[in-house]
Image (cartoon, rainbow, N blue to C red; front, top):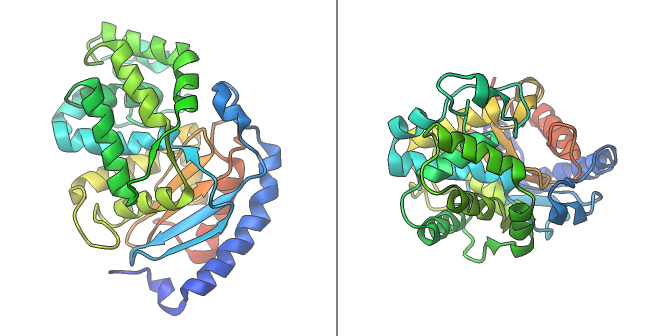
Length: 318
C-alpha cells in the first residue's frame, strides 16, 4: 500500500505521540463554540469531549482523546449517499437534479433554490442537495435505509454500526426547514418520490452512529481511490471517489469551505454533531470529534486541529 512520502521516516508511535499532543492542545478551543441545539438530542453532547483518529492506507490506525465517544454522521453522510447515487444512478442522473457549484449561503438556506434557474440545489453537500440525492436511490424506504447502513458498515469495516434512535426522532420532530426545502423541490420536480418518505430516509442516514475510528476508515477509502485500505478491494470506482473528494474540497465545510481549503487544504466533510471526516489522497483518512460548533456549523476545535495537522505534516493537496 502506498504511504505518504513524509511517513517513510515517521513511525506509527511517533504519529500517535504527535496526535495526542495536538488533541490536548486544541481541546480547550471547544470552549469558544456551542453544541447544536436546534436538534434537541444533539444539545446533550459534552463540549469538552475531543477525539481524533487516523487511518493510514496500510490499514493501521492511530488515535487520541475520547475515542470511545460515539456520535452521529449528520452531514458527513452526504458524501456516502452521493457515492451511492453516482454508482446506482449514474452521473447524468445525479447532476440533472443537483448542481456542482459551491455556495456562500448557510447549509440549510432556501434562497438559492428560489432564485436559480433551474430551481435545483447548487451542490450535494447542502441540505437541499443531499435530500435530492437521497431521493434518487432506488427501492423502497426499507431497502434504501438498509443499503445505506450496509454501505456505511462496509466502508468503516464495522458491522456493529447502527442508528441512534433518539437523534433520529429528534431530527424528525424539528425538521420544518428541511421539509420546506423538500416540498419546494417537489414542486419543481427535483425531488423524486414521496416527500415524507424521502425525509425519513434522510433523517435516518444522518442518525447513523459512529466513532472516530469508523469515520477515519471511511475517509481512508476515499483517500485510497475507493479501495479498502486493508484488503485493496474496490468499494467504489476511482472516478466516483474523485468526484466526492472534489465536492469535499469545494463544499464540504459549508460556507467556510474556501477558507478551510486555504488554511487546511484537504478534502473534508463536517457534520453538526461535531464530527469531521478528512480524506488525504494517497495518505490517510481522518476522523475528528468535538461537538462545540462555530457559527457556520463546523467543529471549532476540530477545524483548528486539522489546521495544525496540515501544517505539521504538510497535508495540503495544493
